[in-house]
Length: 315
Image (cartoon, one colour):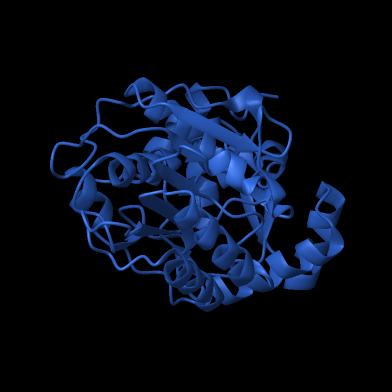
């Protein structure tokens, strides 16, 4: 699942463990890199990536619609300026790579990145999203990313496909459900290998700063799969209050998202996307976090306990 309004940041509940620069970034020990553009730099994943890069001493250019470095996926007029002098970029498309127009945006970004001399791009994508894969390929073709490191003029592209963010329960639209004790979501009885965003950010930074990742497509998951009912039980234990999962239909959830402030078309798209993603094809886990970082991914129970300790569900 990619960065979107559904997974908004809640500054009050920022994870105190996000600067985990002790992790082993890069399978080959890492290398010095120049300035890195982080798109959606104030978003849930972008913020974590920027923090880690800064902790490593890597110059970061944080792009956002209202920040010092203007970057808006709906307005490409500022992209060249944001990419000027940049060696690498972390790309988190808003609202999701599966939306109509995302492939065209990725193609335009890829051309601009290549023209600006960017050498390395890491793209956040959704696991098991066919339309997101189309957008991935559009970026790959437009940037001329052949996957070869050290080839003059080549853009090294790494794709990171993520499972459902664990932090959706602590920093996004599902936060209110945990606080209220009823988690309404169209997940049915499907199990999902929830991924902690600290692990995702560590993998992204490894790919941005280390060798051996060009051309790779990493599918990242947590270490085990849970149904939403099981996740609600673990969240309740960590929060110290009962949390009950209540399955709802896609249209009903779209209405809830609109009440949350998500525009109608986007709410409808997200509800349909969840129905596509939570049909069982994404239930299996992978070992790719360990493969990249040399350690196991964070368990959902550990995420819940840390989030509770950071005050995510106080209120």
